[in-house]
Structures are given as C-alpha cells and as structure tokens.
Length: 293
Image (cartoon, rainbow, N blue to C red):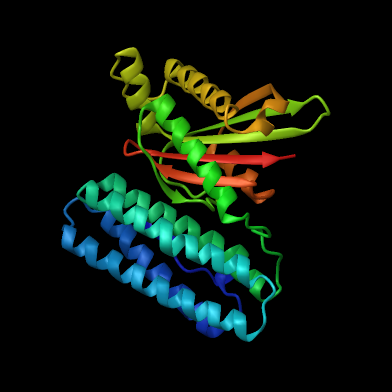
C-alpha cells in the first residue's frame, strides 16, 4: 500500500518551493501509511507523526497562499477556502477520531485515506491550476451560511434515521477514500425535466452496525439483505430532507444505482457536486453529495 504513495513527477506544478513542500508531504503521509499498517506501533509514534504532518501542512498552506498572492492568482479566494476547510475542520475532526478511538487502526486509516486523497486531488487539480496548466475544479464555493444550513439538515436527518450524533469532517468533500463503503446514487426528476442526483456514501461498518441493530442480526459482511435495507434507509433519509429543503419537493424519484468505488470517483472527475459533505457518526463515516443536472 505504501508503494502507492510514491512521489510522481506528474505532481510537479513547476514552482520549486511548492513542489519541494509537496514531496515532503508525500513522504510524511507514506510514513503515516506504514504506521497505520503496523499493529505494533506505539500511540506516541503516531501522535508525533500526525503532529508533524499538521504543522508542516499549515506551514505549506501559508507559503502557497503567499505565492498565489504574489502572482495575483484569480482563484485565490476559492483555493484558500479549500485550505481553510482542511486545516480548520478536516484535520481536527480526524484527530478527534483518533483520540476517541485510542488511535485504532480504523481511525488511522481514516486519517491516511482522507489526507492522501485530499493531497493527491488538490495537487493534481487545484495546485496545477495556479500555473494555468488546467482549470480548477472547485470553481465555486458556496456562501458559508448556505453550507451550514445543508450541514444542519443532513446532520439532523442522520440523527432521525440512524439515531447517531455527527460531526462535520469536511464541507468540501472531494470523494476521498475513507474505507470500505457502499456508494448509492439516487436520481430525481422534476416535471420540467430537470434532474438532481444524490450520492450517499456509507462506510460498511456503519451500515453493518445499524442494519444489524434494526433486524437484531449480527451481520459480518454486506449481503443482499444489508444492501436492500441500506437502500431503504437512504431513500427514507432523502424524503426526510425534503421536509427541510423545499426544492427537493419539486422532484420525483426516477432511478437508483449502487456504484463501484471507481464509478463514484468518475462522478467527481466529471464535475464536483453543488453540496458535498463528509461526516463522522462515531460508528463510521457518511458522505452526502448533491449534483444538479
């Protein structure tokens, strides 16, 4: 697994100071990956490695932002917002997950998976866009009050359906891999032919726990019963959201699909959702994404 995070020359954006920092970050994440796979690793070692990763990331963000200002980069505000979310929401939430789980293997995998996925996607798309090589993909960041309103509705719905408290991990979720999950897409259509797609990503451990609790069965793996129950729960969630989101009431169910991880990844390659949030439920991670067609 650690071989998969070797530095690749395609990550270079052509600015030596920035490229050097990115190479260092990959080296740190590689070390974290090795620690996450080593069941004998000590908690102190993990704490120190993560502390260094956080410190270096914050330092790098500041340097990168200074460079963007120096060249009067037009996408500065959007890019800085992505840095802010990672620094102020995602890393603290991942750290809290680690502490509360006593640095469990699952929490380490959450940290490494989200950090690696974010870092890779951010460098390949957003950082390369700084030099004009490609267009940035997060070309719009919604007002904070609008995002917070969506966050509250999704969090409230998770509580109503799953009976679980949540905390936000990211409100700019870019499809990062956080572990074995079910990827469920529901398409709705309005009378005027307009479509929206809702993607729900549910970590398998969350699904197995909640479906097992509902049916009083100790499920060890996702089977047809678990999958069908997950679909029903997901559709129930969207219906409940319609009580809070008036625009959802204009749409009727059209079709649904269970996607592979690769298919879900391609959805982000074709364009980022309008809303894309990642939550920690305490029992597993949960992502809510909404695309307008």
